[in-house]
Image 1: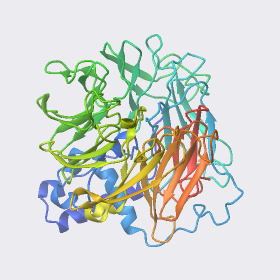
Image 2 (image 1 turned 135 degrees about the horizontal axis):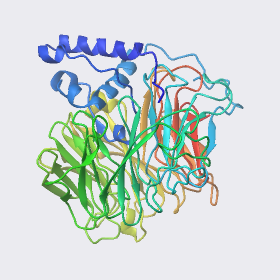
Image 3 (image 1 turned 180 degrees about the horizontal axis):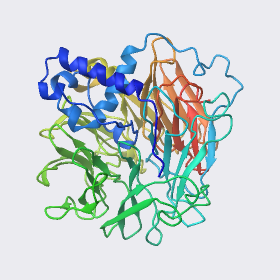
Length: 551
């Protein structure tokens, strides 16, 4: 397999700044002497579900070693704080008007499953690389060798009008049939290794779930398109390791990788929580007793989120309960009713959001017996801190799935100055509304709610929300929220769309059937290099759009 090479100047500078912060904060000599490995900056679903405030570097410095996602967020925070002026590059839309600078690549008969996301790898958030940077898409259809791919990746991402990588389309990095059992599909989200050379993901059928680790390869024999795939290890040097772990499908539980301990956790529709050892650095194997942990027999589980401070795993189930399981002892600590068991569609369907530095966890249900709700709890005790309504949700008689929201950029400096945006419904109807809540100290403040209807449609539904602050767009930077809507974006019977919302307003771009969850790119000012990635749910395309204006 080809080795990835890319300038690490900004990454090195980030570590120098972090070293200065450590010295200024008078941290321990052990931490001050720590030198990081040469790793990249993966962006996958896990980066949208665990957060750390800026004070983590002075108050909890050991987290830098225990959780690489702390570093990834630090790089974002450092770039935002150091941005002195808006860029005057291809990111500016002032003259873009008539130009369409995005790309859309056909994926055959598949797309990313609703609510799930692609994964993006790069070595540096501020420098784009045509060869090393790639985006990978797991597809919800069985693979066929020399036919339909189930896992496909593209590089030369920054292509198109004015693009760093040329004016054409991106390049297929690899296209694989990873189906190992009849009907096997990828219906959850993948996770990347820190160096980008391996990908962990789950294949599911109606009666089985298989955990895979792929070491991908490039060059001839690794597939050429979404409809001309290759089998890993057949005519190429790719390696696919497969670990069957459940005799049930895995509908919602993407794997969470604990990078330092090299283990993965995921659930399945049998209501059990599983552990895999040796994920990226060793030989993957299914952990034995006391694993798996039976949580709630035959109830779907969300993906788990690991809090490195408490070592607790947080996840939800189809009955609306939020759980805390100690990852060291494999014991259930607590459970908290977010939705109302036996009510219409009380399920928590999205992985919780964990604020590790402030000790809080957030989960959403569309029915607690009265309304749809966003609930905040304590990570140590799982006691409820706040419960806020977000419309009537499924309590009105229609099954409506609701996903987690996202914090704005101010939250990472101080929750009391930040807000959280989430999608709900109208208080007395099924139309989609966005709700924004402020905080009193660290706790959600129900009295601070700002709400507005997104669309006047009773059939259109939101994808998960994503947030991204880009300091190189607009005076002082721009805080973006991105999400998709499934239908009726410009009127009844019109297509779905992708939406960008900033302090300046809202932009909608038609996308058939709406979008999967959205992964953001970096902040490079090079042409086409600050973008978002998703698949259409109705047209089976992999899509890249610029952050600024969705061009």
